[in-house]
Image (cartoon, rainbow, N blue to C red; front, side, top):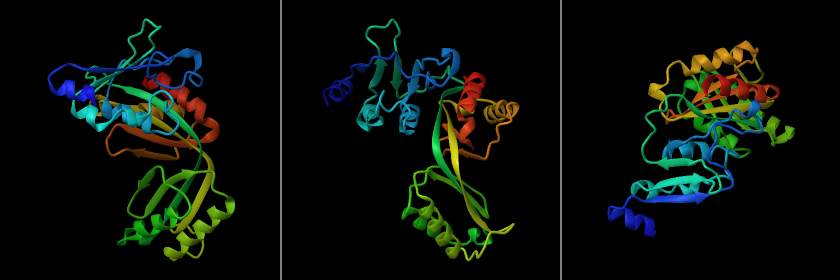
Length: 256
């Protein structure tokens, strides 16, 4: 790439991508009420890839393959902007925006199924491998939350009832669970939703989880699952699908 070659020669290179929108926004303006979405003025590569990696989250705006490894290593910036707008758009670079101390982006996803497994065998060797080998035959896993004896994960709800029951029976057999009880069970719940909260500077963001939980509790929205991603750039909440739009608006108002 010519831009990479010029950057290695010491030139300050910015790759400009022109779109009909002013840049990356803090959420979907069709969902957030009163047009309160904000422009993300500056963001680092990893956080931008986190956002574009979430399915249906600004994928048409910027494909995550645009943010290639070669650009990052050459310290090339990417500016996403509307040439017919006064806005400077969104600048993506290798450096974090140190002035950002809160959530940058909130997104939701419908048509999710929650799986919950509890078994004293979960603490044994290779058990997770056995479980996910079974799941792999039927669907791909999205979000995972674990403890010593329990496992929760999500899959898309497009899987038929017959396939869901078949997968459940196989998992029960692998864990020697004849029927659901108080301590040992394998169950699933359909028509759930996920809410993604993404930001750049987790270590400078205080009480984010507490603020989010408090905001949702005011409207009696129950958090059924929580997962914090390994890169510490996102927290994901699992909730009822009927409450998704309300949750996005509440979290956007409280955190952004």
